[in-house]
Image (cartoon, rainbow, N blue to C red; front, side):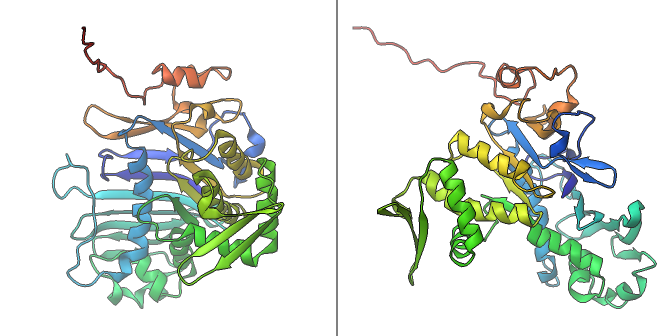
Length: 389
């Protein structure tokens, strides 16, 4: 579970932004929150904003953070660290990330600051029994260790390089289980859709699960029937060039390629969503409503929020669908906005941070009227001249 994420100096994000899944004092839908060590954590959060305000940049930044962690150990001597800074940043300004999250029954905090040339700082802490304890803390090439881990980490210090993250080094070469757990959290638990850097083929994954796991297949058929798609069975046909799933509508069989984009997308995303719910992963989904009917989006959200009791799976999504701006469906701390500041830097804030928002307020209307910011203002509408005879 993600608790809090911060980013600074990535694409449209110039100044530090903070995003949190921690619940505020709002008592709405408390039964849908995840309890953990005295904290209450949201299962879902939506992000709204004008085109170009930085919604996608914000979501990509977390995927970029994941990529840094997963690929760092591949850096060779002399390799630069990939950096995509804000265009108005002073050269050599570092990019900084921090992430607080829960894996299993333990809370972790990991952060780093770097330039193209080297890692400037990096730390990893955890909270056994609710108390903060150091795993490692790095300033340039000087690394200090928590007492419990010192002996194991000192054996691998020679593997540490200025252009490598010590988290990646320690996960691959040390016997420290906590480092491996955190590394695998980035690698396996943060799932992105549809982000260019994500290389997994969701459709192939879904077809494989539907073919080999009868329980997943049964769930999918029930899900489709609940949406008034009367599917009785699913057959898959494997060929050398591609995978051709067929839908069996009573008597009629239909090739998936002949179906609408919405049906194709449901096949693509359903199994990963079930995996996220059952295995407590996090799905970060850019523009969730693309090719999907609003009712289907609502059903996906219901699955995440209520589909499995005690699930710690989370969904963070961007959208333009104002039908979801409804306080009878979401808490105020689940609704976030992005906006470009006067310095052309993305800012992100939640509805819970704004004052005087009533629980019965029409959020959709207020958003479209610009009450909460984060919408485009068209100052000079384009008007075509009318030619007279």
